[in-house]
Length: 429
Ligand code: HAM
Image (cartoon, rainbow, N blue to C red; front, side, top):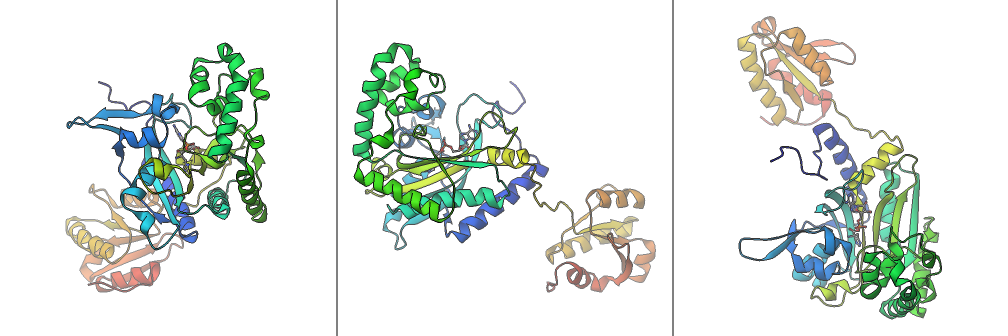
């Protein structure tokens, strides 16, 4: 048995976690401004949720799910994506009956996909996503796209490309599907084995195939945009008009089909165009899924959302050389020298902590000089010194590490003094 982390997973160590937390705090703040509420769903679901939700013919369901039988013989799957789980929760908890409509949700999720790992492609991955259920208004499509773009912008990314397409409604898709089957059938034997299967199951996905992308039939394939019926075309035009109004630039790509089956109407992806970002450039993907709620046993409810990979977001931040404003310093370091002082230090450190002050101390009986070094390493803003002399006078010395100023503070005033320096708050006894 190997004692290494499984392939496609990664440890996120404390320094790196600080970057994640910063990014997450910005994303949460944006959701707050857009008035989206957080939802948390289980890490695993009944396998059927994804088979029906994501679609039996997708790569995710056919090749990538971590599916297992539990001790009761039920087939369960570690969630490979968030939308199906959120919609399952929406239906099960009857959120369609909530007085506030549409229901606007966001989530942070760990997901599991048995993919071939490479940079930016993990087997355990993290996504931030949003789902809006209960409105078929094109302004919601534009809002969801705007939210995604705002996230990247506020984190400082600028080399971005928003790619947009419409997959139309059911009628448009059926007509397009027929045209695709007619178009690709004469070339069936020249297509890869996956596409040969897709020809019957889901010909739209042929357009997305990496193996066959240079086949001449790809270039001449019928475009969904030529098969949109009037409603779908108008809907798409309105989405584009809202984006224009918000001054969000986009490019149209009629081959953008997305790898999950639930999409209709608006589909979009956001790519990084930063130099050196790597081979996989998709940062986020999403779209409308008006039939999904019914598919999962709920009332007919329109929906739209997107998800962004957090690993890829952090990679893009690095590729664009963005330094996140992370404060890794501690407010105070308590230096105590001598047995009695060390004991008293534990008491004082605790008192400071419960009064809102961030403080750390030495735990290894180190000499004063080594304790100062530890304070430096932690980038302490203040050092509080308690030695024999101070003990005698019931004081501590507080040194401001930035200015070098040192002041004697009576022990009884320590909490108040540090609060005034750092917080301006009140004291809990
Ligand atoms: P998706 O395109 O499968 O869509 O994934 C969205 C994003 O998750 C990708 O653009 C990428 O950034 C990240 N991602 C996907 N797979 C991996 C991986 N193996 N390793 C690292 N990052 C990855 C969905 O998941 C849909 N549920 C999005 C959605 C929400 N549609 C509507 N609402």
